Length: 220
Image (cartoon, rainbow, N blue to C red; front, side, top):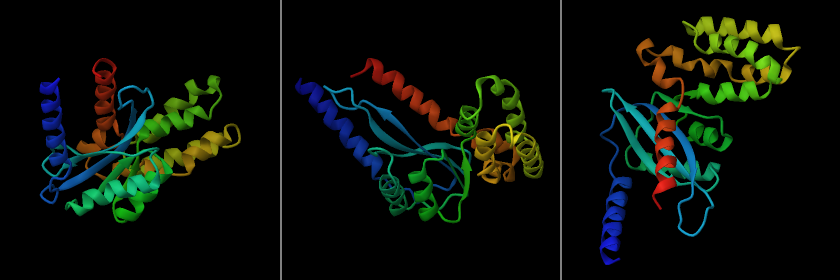
């Protein structure tokens, strides 16, 4: 038991050092933000929010920037999380990729007012499909896919506006969901085409979360 305690203290010290490290030397182009809910404490199955920030640097390297507990992903929790990184020297990125959580989006607008915003298209697609009748999903999904994976920003707007006009009366909730931030959904198309695949979703974080869930199922 004493050996386990020493290892635990050593890991905690390393983790605290990592969480307080200087970030000013990192030239972040793309910042990805999301949260995962995990059962973190022994003796309880109650899950707690873990806020996470990942980045792609100017040299193409992918870096895990920060982790912190964040209760229920509140605006205050996200604001504190972002300010923690800026206080350690993180500069405003070109693009922030996240889901549409209101507290997160508000915090991002305040802390990084000049960064472009990109909703995760995987999350957005699920939101749109959830507002459709089941029988309509098979027909509408490929049409939305054409919008989100257009060959240019202008082409995406044209396809999106046409889709909304065509189905607004039949599927008002789904088309309203698409229309409310259509332009932001296509923000990634303003960047180099070679970068599109990695910046249109937050899959970079989802893979990390998946590994975290897998490990916490078997490791106390």
